[in-house]
Amino acid sequence: MRAVMNGIPRMNPKREVCEEEMRGIERLAGCVVVAAMYLLPVPGEAQTSANAKESATEELRSLMTTALGAARAGDHAKLEEIARNLMVPNYEAWFKSTFGEEEGTKLATAYKVNFDRQEKWIPTLFASLSKQEGEVLVEDAREPRYAGASNQCGRALMKSAKSDAVFYRVSLQEVLHPGLNRLDEAGYFTLVEGAYRRLDCKDLGLARVLSAPPPLPMPGSLRVSGNVQAKRIISRVPPVYPMKAREERISGTVCLRVLIAKDGTVEQVEVVSGHPLLQQAAVDAVRQWRYQSTFLNGNPVEIDTTVDLIFSLNNPPTPNP
Image 1 (cartoon, helix red, strand yellow):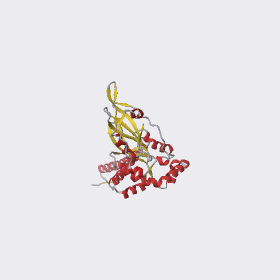
Image 2 (tube, rainbow, N blue to C red):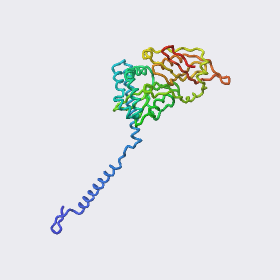
Image 3 (cartoon, rainbow, N blue to C red):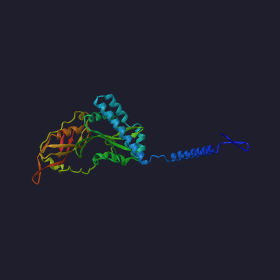
Image 4 (cartoon, rainbow, N blue to C red):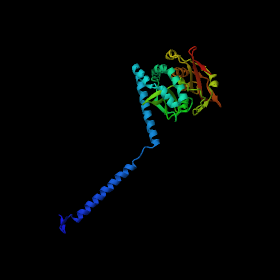
């Protein structure tokens, strides 16, 4: 009920206090909302970088899954479409903006010379990889999981790049033995005009022969150089030159890391380097080799060594002792 004082109606004093408290609460709530707006977390540079890396990993894995699936299904039209999309568009401008005017001009010229051949070869690459086993591995070239000569392309790209471009190495990783993995490389990829494109350091002239530090020996094995161990071969099966590699006029050396059992048989084989079309032939051959047993203090030991197989179009593949 309203009370009347000096002829003026007035609210009940208790109700006035109550409404005043409510207005105070509303003002306080407004301040809390404003404060909360200013306290919202802002993504930092490290978080943004991590998100970008995660996104790149997902996109490149999806790309590999699609390409390998098309290869296994024999979908040549899809593989050709993927190959076209992996080529760098407007490459002259991109190479110059990424690597600088002088270096970019050289790289763009090399890219142009090999453009058609690369586009035609990419489906063959995925067809070869589709026959292998393994998990898709995406590595930031700045933080490679595995060190060694196989990272020379990434090092060359980062050394030459003048911008903030990020490069990723994509491979199929198969665990052959605890601590011993095989990597079948799909190449290096970078984001250009909203999509990932493939770069071939060899065609760009960036790949140089680098001496890689030898890997750590396998636990319980004895490290022996390839030259010395080659003299202990009892039975050597030569690799069969892949027909596709002959058609593509591909040659070169495949370097393998080999773990030899105590009885002289080949226990494990890992590809260190070499053209994807030549790798499987080299592995299949060396797995059949037989060595003399090696003894240390009268006891047979496992041997950790390397084998280089040279594939030449003019001659049958030969081991390089």
